[in-house]
Length: 410
Image 1 (tube, rainbow, N blue to C red):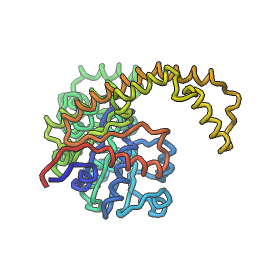
Image 2: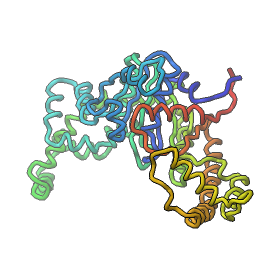
Image 3: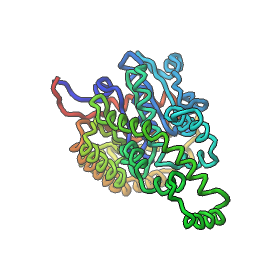
């Protein structure tokens, strides 16, 4: 029997999709998983990210990177204290370039390709088209896997108000080509039944929306429909990839009520779609010890102000602070008196019950998530934002150390 952990998950998959609601730290977790993978594995590991924080993007060299993967230099990893056995590559989803690549790939001929790219509404429509970030991320996953250049591809899925949009993006693309909307937009320009009775509507619409507005839209979708076969075929291939046993989903969530609810919903949706859930990462978790009776008793003692021996707790804290002042260049605490320290300690003791209550709720929600996943990873609150490779290395350690998995057959 072997114990499931994050290292084993990353070593046993070719594709990992990091999903979850917005604002839970998916991008940073995905990058840290890439670092964790190259520490343990030889071979090529690629992280496809969406929108990292600016400082992290700069640290990863992403300020000038798009859909083409670039390697993080080994010496940069070494300077950050990361001993990498494998090679780490990073790419960042570029929606504009991604759509251009799709048009080049699926256009039946050069004339159709050039007409689509030259259409005045092309950029505006595709930037909003069926949540294009979701679909393009799936297309990129398919392409990167097909190259065979990477032993592991980790995809940071786009932020979304509904995490299911990433799962449904391929099917929505396929369904679009059979939709009433597309038929309504294109039938006047494909059918000889376009009668004089239809023309007044388009004239009124043009006078309200601008000259040739509807015709530009229709022209675009007539051209777009010519690429139906390629788009639908690829959409079905991507759907198949999402259910492949070589793929795993990792759900990232904080333990607040709304993100946890979204994580549970997504885990159940994956199960219904027979898409493999590999792990749930609970991010920014308070220490479980805060909910223990011993911690509560310590806080109560802190609030009484009673110390052991001749000194009160406040006096002992103040003495320790002044000892630290003597050993450092920090501003002196000579102006702080015992009464002020005592007030602060009492305030901390009074607020401890609130913190302990939050920790208890988090423990309950973590247990609920553990029932839905073969592996749960707890990542503690960090002292600041992660904005460099060294920080990603620390987070990678936390991901490894926070694994709580069940026993599985060898």
